[in-house]
Length: 412
Image 1 (tube, rainbow, N blue to C red):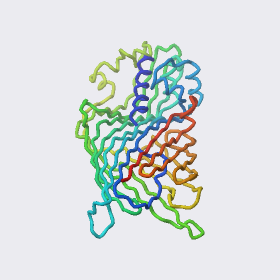
Image 2 (cartoon, helix red, strand yellow; image 1 turned 90 degrees about the vertical axis):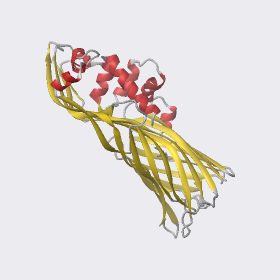
Image 3 (cartoon, rainbow, N blue to C red; image 1 turned 45 degrees about the horizontal axis):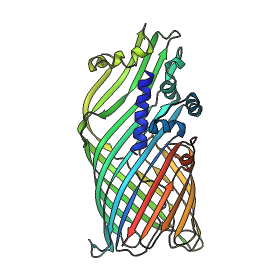
């Protein structure tokens, strides 16, 4: 039983770690320099947890022995409800400022393609204990996993849009292929064991939705990317720029039927070991007919779902400012309870026109407090940026996750 649950957890974390929207803090600066054409390639990975440490994460990603010390270190950080999750992005964008779709507006055109994914979960400390320590820890006790929620979505997109030649504000309309969708939510989920471990009571009230076929395309969607830069007064006659950024905001329709399980039941078992109820050969895993008799219904459903998009609003860096030091700050929101609102603030320092870097602190998302660093190099035609939202996690096995993003822009 323990091996099976550990395998499931490892698979979930591997998906989180390998499949995760470009929300990195690498500032997209306010830049009014005239361009003819641009190609921008950006991508990266960020995953984190409110409780699990990197020394545990790494075992799922790279393999290795999970020792008692590693488990205990993460176990001590768990609270009633905990978060884990991540995002992945890989995008390419072509901008042509010479194409004038509207004669009365100084707009160019954007063409883009990419793949994005979002996944994570909210889980209880008892769920962590069951997975890593087994049910022996809870003999004569109740495991409470109520409030558990998991989501995983991955999409591919192509889009076309318009860009203002001066401010670089832009908008695109995108078509999406949704190739994976999974969602679960448990309002109540408790497992109780008697003192001798022979009586087990299972209470569940929740839903589970997952793909029913291996087809690459599970659904089709329509969404937008928006990047507006607005000037605002900033004291002493100065201006600052507020960016309203939205990525992959829209809906998709799952035309492939998804397996939907509705669970609302209380089951009592006597004279059975825990593994007989929930194990490799568990009686509740025998067949759909058995599940139905236990209060678990299942059906195929086609449905509309949200794309894995986000909205970020904040003050950005003005590339043309004479100041060496500038502030930036903002907030990022995903339409998911798994991702708590992420607030950040930092300082940007320009050493020369060639090199700038910055640092920030933030709170929220899939974890709590964390710090980030970035560096940006500008050559004649090419600029390269590298950023991490979790610099401690990038270098320390006791950090909570890792984050690394890169952005390359070529102007010609």
